[in-house]
Amino acid sequence: MAGQKRKYRKMRRAEAEQRTRVRITESTVELHGMLGPARTSVSAVARHAGVRRSTVYRHFPDEHSLFAACTSHWMAANPFPDINRWKAIDDSAVRLRSALSELYAYYRHTERMMSNVLRDERTMPLVKRLLGGYRDYLSAARDTLMIGSGVRGLAQRQVSAAIGHALTFTTWRSLVREQGLTETQAAGLMCRLVGRGAGQLVSRTRKPAHTRNQTVR
Image (cartoon, rainbow, N blue to C red; front, side):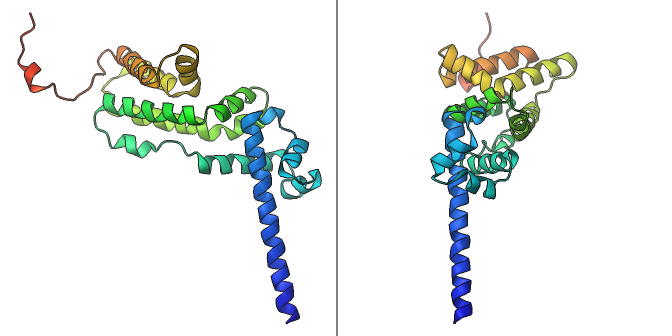
């Protein structure tokens, strides 16, 4: 009987510790979204989570472990758009527009956190390292959107650069927040930029029947 009670108490303590860890992680996520990593102190996290600083350090002995948990927690709730969906689209121009539409909607949804983290990347090497996953994602997305572009040499470099530029959060923020375009307009503008870089990247979708046989005068 005594052994069962000890086992029960141990299980309850473990559950309480896990709840505390989650509360600290969620508090860190919220503060990073409100203030940014560089302006979030351990004391602020402790106050927000309703625990002592020593409790934060017991669960997360250093800044890296705390930020890594924060990043994993936030990414689980805010996953990037699925690149595999874009791969299933054969038409390269349609694929690009679909990708930008999804990604720009994602940026709108995550704007506050993305703005803070990218701002603090310049002053916090740890944040820059943790953003490696975001950079890898953009690189993989660019490679996917280059499939079937049919360009080589200089045109290939131009198209790759234009797509890479179009995919970034800073491009979305500039066009939508600073220049006042809608997301649809911003995506369309970037598609035209990519097309200009290629000189030939146009939709392979067939023209409607009523236009195919028209004679150009």
